[in-house]
Image (tube, rainbow, N blue to C red; front, side):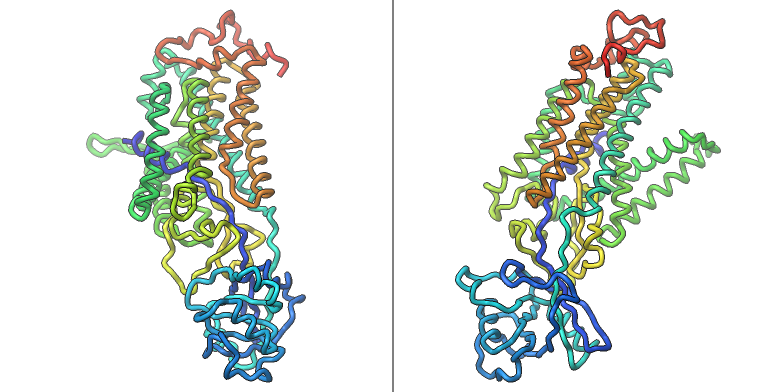
Length: 540
């Protein structure tokens, strides 16, 4: 059952998300005593705004929400000249409203909307005609300003520049590399414990099965597994509104179990004792009961508050790290051949569902992005250069909880339109992490004191992640990280094995049914020499 839960959860992990180039800005309203700031949406390429509040020009605000301003009839130029206008959305294009306001002598046009705020646009011929700032605001925000500030309102419009290089990227990178390194180290430690316990390689298959660990050793099973993932992703695309709750439930169960495993391993490492007691024929550990209660509580708190953006990301990242660590420790790839097959297929899977599927979908959005962001996510549907902000409070749309999320710190104080996050899918940690875990176990098999395979693969993963973020920043859109991580990690591992003359053994790995732990993996190495390390055969 545990294996089935892990398998189902993995099917939902490999998603990607792209960042959007937001065109959100801030409306500062004041009467000299009280001031408020609200979210507005503008088109920077059409009517650019000041980047700072101090640099923005202040204008008196005239309330014309009783009209759509599709023509100038009934509006006195003396009333609006040199002032900012707020009018209602509808009946005509944004550019027509702007031209009418401009001809009347207005200096700024705010369009109040009861619908979602979208980036204003116009025909190419109209861009050159409009010279005044134009932005959309929520009508409910204007009513709030009227109630709080009252008469004599003045406004300033400004759009702070958000740096593409945000500290959240460094945090995401740190989370990823630490998780991969810890997961690989944990897998290697468990392998060494099995060898030292006397179970060895000879009875390793049964021992792994008894411990609940799963091993992928058949190429056919790997192909079937990836095919199931493709089918699961397509099902999520067509039946998202139902299956998303199934994934959320599985996520809570799997993460509670993973968090328990991580905490229990830490307790065991630091030598924390435990007290056991029996009730009839059942034995209970006080430490296990306390840990189980804590882990279940954390998962429940996340499940209940999963749509609270301001702080729930901390719990989601904690659960995500625990899940990835436990997955890398539990799921093992038996040899490098399986690693190559699995990672190569997942690379093709990632690229196909991100870059190819937009040619087949009705809205031109890739299946991967649609599933990752949810059907209500609008940033990708507008190709990254448009935004859409709800005009009224809405029930948050459910999203798959399979990404690390860190708020963009540069936009932390400017989230009037909604918080912005840097994200990384769990699959971008787990997939290369399985290869890192295999390298760590192989170091144990060959008794490498320098852990050359493990360290080299971790460095390759770090370089691959750095390249992923560099390309993302240069291109202005999210990237399928496996496109860079898979070649970096596979090629690095193969080069190390080839340099050391161990490719044959690295490729074949170990079959637990055949090899005996009392014999070295490499021929010609005497088991009686415990200080011998095959790493000495290679200068690194």
